Length: 520
Image 1 (cartoon, rainbow, N blue to C red):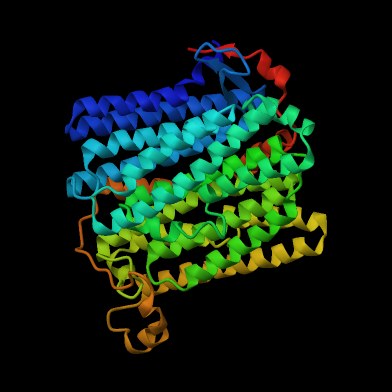
Image 2: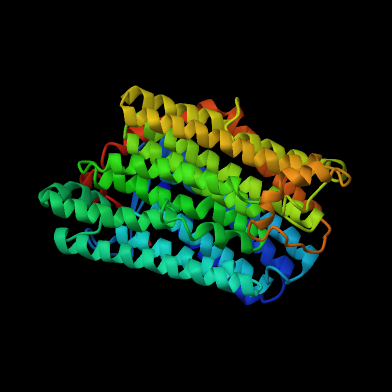
């Protein structure tokens, strides 16, 4: 069997799966079944491709019948295959969570006739971005997932979702314009948008032109990755969406931006050094993001700010620019996709059980819902970087790679990373203590200690309590188990990430792409 034939299926299957639910109309069970089956099959293909490329060479497929450098090349290496595999598992788990929510609530939050096609189109955009071999196809992948995300973030058409969705759309369009402008300038300067050819020809350009193109791409991708100070849109946009939408956005959308930054820094502009700038930005992202989280009283906003701060760790590792640091960055990226999604799913359960996600309102859940307490507690410790979880292992690897450089700025970043980790643990454990340990009668002294949070955004929001279907709990349990599995199997996973780090610092060979196989 020619394994490269599986590569186009990563993008085509979700698009085909999105078309079928549109035909099925309002048949909820059939739509859910098609969506689940599509993502399950895609996950299986991604795992097979990961095994193939990890044991041999990357796979490159030319589609649409055009020769290079004009043809569209789909490129799957270890990084692409790993991210598609993890993303498909996360998308599947969140979809199961959503199916349970839809079955219990009807179409109030996630209209089924719109949700399933939009969700699968989002998946197609994510997968296409990960396997794009040229900048324009990467741009197309971004636009596919962004169009779908516009629909998903405004589901229900409430005032708050429309308002925050508008901000999200405007910011995304600005990022897309910058990206498209960079593509046009690169094509004008080099005559190609193929990543391998760009890497080969970039040295032909003057240094100032290289720097301009470099900074323009980094700026576009930094907006998508929510890197400070371009992260202002995220904490207000994500919390208003339905719980499954927020979970998948938090876990995956910013990581597509981080992925694009990784490709840019390691393979397109490996001779153009802006690492000092990236280190400063990484420190600001970590510290400002976590200080924002500490000041919040609403669980979704706390997690949104921690999401921003932990993107800083990935930029930190990318700026160190060594094989060990890149491998550690990939490991931490995988960890964060899983753990951040898991926490948002757990908060979705809290919202249904307590009718609120405000730590000023939620009380006594340890007695009322002990399972939810565990489902929140384990990934919270993991995200906070407590040993022996994968969060600790990833951060330790990043700090070790930074210490190996031995510069004063690296040590400043290490201190900033440790501080961010401690404050993450503080913010998440404070929320756990108030929501789960605090009893209804524990009011006077505790309320006095947290009175300063009373002015935090949306701290007083209260909804009706709802029944939690078993499938929602099962999906969250599965994600918690997967997050624990990252710790149990950290050795084999880190070995793959280490091999990715080694290969990424070796630019894609144009000779390798000149012999790509023809796809459909």
